[in-house]
Length: 318
Ligand SMILES: Nc1ncnc2c1ncn2[C@@H]1O[C@H](COP(=O)(O)OP(=O)(O)OP(=O)(O)O)[C@@H](O)[C@H]1O
Ligand SMILES: [Mg+2]
Image 1 (tube, rainbow, N blue to C red):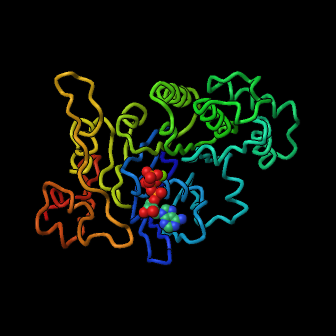
Image 2: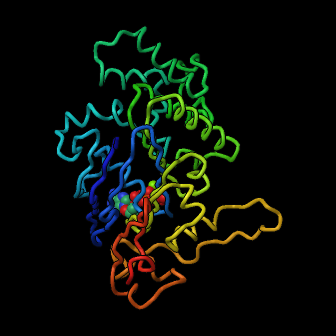
Image 3: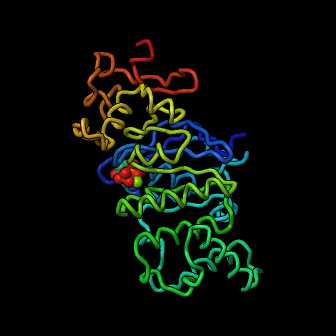
């Protein structure tokens, strides 16, 4: 069964200098216990999409479409209903961990704050028990509940963030670049933590990252975003073996490859468009090696190729 259905989701930010089309007509679903990677370069709308699910976008954002979670459209819940959802049913690890942990609050109080919102009558012993279990499940000594966030390394802080997010056993965890700020070794440790959680908890995961390598390690499905559009979606194995969208191909070619005879790392030339004034037609055409005339004038439709979705004129018969 699908846990999350995102239907025709569009999000715009109003700014003094124009309207940013951060997410455009995005449709995908996440099944129970499934892990979905959302990848794309900086500014493609990944965080906007994640934050929109929790309805925590800033006031200059407008959201259209449907976000159906467990049969309910989150966009039509009251603020109070949504507040009860956050942290309990859907949890998020935000892109910047330092803004999410309060440096002058002990780790335990971060947990307690969450528990009090959802279960005001919970006893202190129970709160300590739940918090300790959560810390243990991310490989952190529960003794550290008495520490302050500034006493932790970056990797430890990220573990704490994950522990808080999963403490109330949410059905969906959204992790926005959970390893980006960390060195490679710690990055791998956090990946292991997430992998273990996926195995042991009844949870679905949306993993937001710019790194296709990380997605391939952790996710079963992947949504590739470019300039606010979903350009390709499907099983990670299939996409990895045979990427269809030219942008996906480029992303895959830019994964570091340690094989000695293949040391040349391709980088993606150019950069994503200004989302206040994106190109007409396909947004990727200025960087695409396969551009045809139609790409410059007509936006491609999303077509289904088996289980795969691709938004590209190469496949739309155009
Ligand atoms: N509060 C805001 N007001 C106006 N524009 C915004 C706001 N937040 C984000 N944007 C714009 O929306 C677009 C998508 O941003 P978003 O942060 O979702 O991208 P991202 O894919 O998460 O990028 P990154 O990989 O750098 O985290 C960008 O063009 C960004 O500048
Ligand atoms: Mg982001």
